[in-house]
Amino acid sequence: MQDSVGAFLVQRLTVQYFANLREERGVSDETRETQARTPVQLYEEIANEYHLTVALSALRVAVNDEFSTMDAVLKDGDVVAFIPPVAGG
Image (cartoon, rainbow, N blue to C red; front, side, top):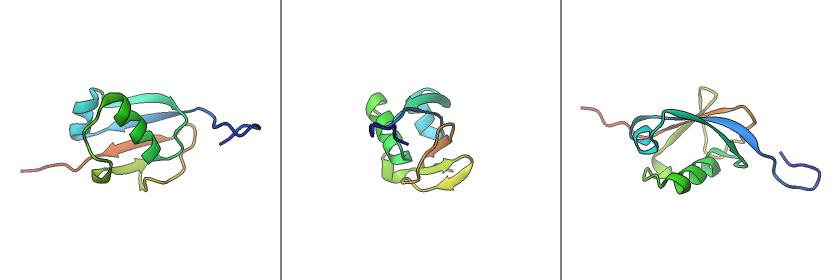
């Protein structure tokens, strides 16, 4: 979403973290104000801010409780879950 002068507007998203990503981030969820328009932009923003080591290519993403693609367009109020591979044993 852009305003009348073409600047991207800030939107509020809920971000959920699972498994080792939750451990690295130190929280299971948070609300963020961001200009990120896609999950990939959002993850890159968070990974850079908190020095996360989980590779983007290893993640799955869900938007509003449905698996999605990393290039899906996010909307204000969306819930974005980043899900890394889970090791079992």
